[in-house]
Image (cartoon, rainbow, N blue to C red; front, side, top):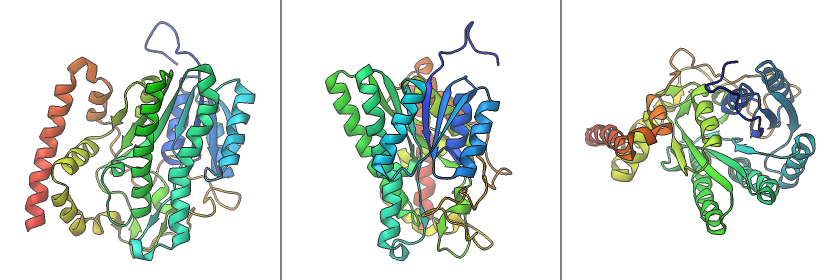
Length: 347
C-alpha cells in the first residue's frame, strides 16, 4: 500500500454499524485499507464473517460483533467489547438502518416502530455508547451516515425518511452541546445520494415492482470515501455526496412545493423496476443471517452506478476553492432543477 505522505496514517480503532453489507461493508474496507482496526457490528453472521475476511485481506484487523442496534444494552456491551479488545475507540460510524417500501397507510405500526428503532434509535444508542468511551479521552469522531432524505421526504419511504430527519435534528443538538462544553469529540454527518446496495433486494416491499433507488445511482465506494474523509475531518458539521444530493437539498430549500408535486408524479415509478420483488426481507431477521447468504457491498445496479462524484471531491476540498464556489455550483444545479420541477409540476 502506498500512502499519500512519507508515513502511513495513524492506525485507528473504528466501529462501523451495519457493516455486513452495502455502504457499511464498503466503509469497513476503506478503513481497513488504511490499516485500521475495524469492529464490524451487524445482525447477519454470514455477512459479518465475509466482511471480516475482506477487512483482513485489505490490510486491517477485524473484530466481529453480532448485535441488533435497536437493543440499547446490547449496543453498550458491543462498545465495551471493542474497547476491551483494542483499548479505545477513535471513530464510530452509525450506518445501520432498516426500511419498508410502501405507502404509509400500508405499513403496520409494528413495522414503522421497527424501522424507527433500528435507524433512528440505533443511531442514538450507538452515539451514546461511543460517547461513553470518547468523552473521558476528550477525543474521537462520530460519523452519522445520513441521506438527502434527511432533509427531503419522498413517497414510499415514510418510516426511513422520518428516521433520517430525526437523526439530523439529534446530531445538530448534540453538536451544539459538545461545542458548548468545549469537548474534543466531534460529531459530523454525511448526506448520501442513492447508492447501489443490496438493500433494494432485501427491503420489505409491498409495491408491485422491484424496489430500486432513484437515479442517479452511485457505487458504495463513493459513500465510503466520503465517510472515511469525514472521520478524519470531524470539525465540518456536514458533507454532501453527489450532485444529486446538493441539488435536492438546495431545491427543497428554495421550492419545496414544486418538489412535492414533482415527487407525487414521479416518485412511485422512479422507485420500481419491472419484475416481482424478492420475498427475502431483513426487517425482523437478517437476510445474511445463519439461513441466508452474504450479499456483499454492491446491489444489482452496477451497470448504471457511478463510480466517482466530482461534487463530493469539491465538498471535501472546499477550502481550496472557498465556500462561494461550492455554493455557487450548488445553486446553479439547483436553479436548473427547480425550473425543470416547476415545468413538470405544471405539465
